[in-house]
Amino acid sequence: MTADLVVWAEQVARTCLRDLPRRLRHVEGVARRAMMVADAMDDPELLVAAAWLHDIGYGAELATTGFHPVDGAEFLHGQGVSRRLCALVANHSCACVEARRRGIPLRWEDELTPLRDALWWADMTTTPTGEPTNVQARIAEVLDRYGPEHVVAASVAESAPQLIAAAERTEVTARAAGVDFR
Image (cartoon, rainbow, N blue to C red; front, top):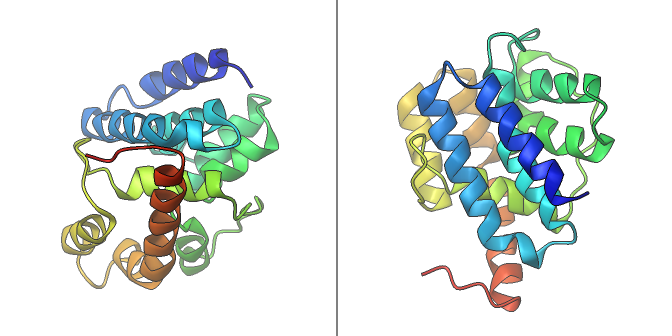
């Protein structure tokens, strides 16, 4: 992986999300958050690329299942990117729970690594408009925005302990590597 991957990922995200400016602002914020902790990870460029790409499945031209993590991963697979990058996108922020609730097969294995945790942290500590937040506030925002009966809210509520644990692990790892979150 090289810095070229990050440049490519940003271009893909900007293209796929060009008609979704709020979603693009969120993705820009997630990429900024990922850059904060990237050097504490085994593959910094992969983390930042995954941050740029995690929501591309929202792009209308990519939607096949209607579930953005799977649609994004399938698009990336068709582009010939690594299986690891596809899996990070497919599994971001505990997507397996929502996939199960929607009855959508998730063929990409969750790698359960610090890099995966860092992607979840970056996503779950960024508001819909790209501003930094904390994981508890982000979970509350999602629950409020969708309402308790929506599949997204129910999935996030079920996933909350895993999302919080991933965020906590990321912050411990990043602090040990010298990241200052102030």
